[in-house]
Image (cartoon, rainbow, N blue to C red; front, side, top):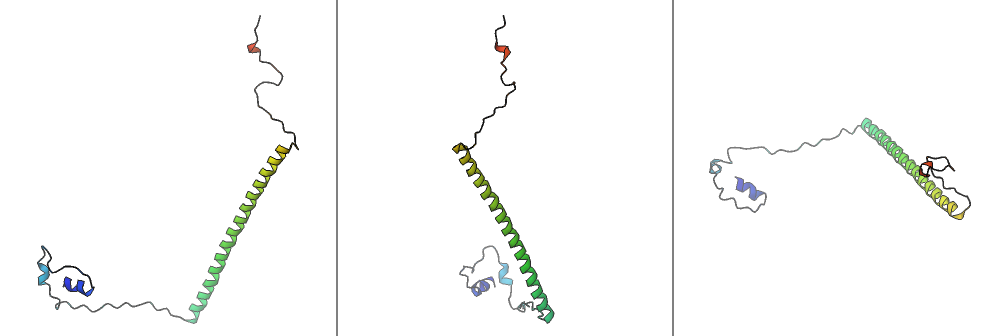
Length: 125
């Protein structure tokens, strides 16, 4: 029976001898008759209310998609503006520093008052 099934599926397999299994000879295919199983596909009840509900749902989904798309678009434009502003400010600052337009002082942070000398290094006599 298994060999017939394999040949029905066009499987090229050697199945005439199954080692260690003699119970297949006792199975008779004429004892069991199974009716073929036919699928019952779901068929939608296409009434007027279902078409109206479908149109409303399509409109709702379109508006949600448009809202998400527009929000992402606005966020991208905002972030692009921030990046461009930061880049322009950095370039402008480099030009101002190199041109000498502004006199910049380099300020150091110290622990001592400016102009005082360290008295610990002086020779005391």
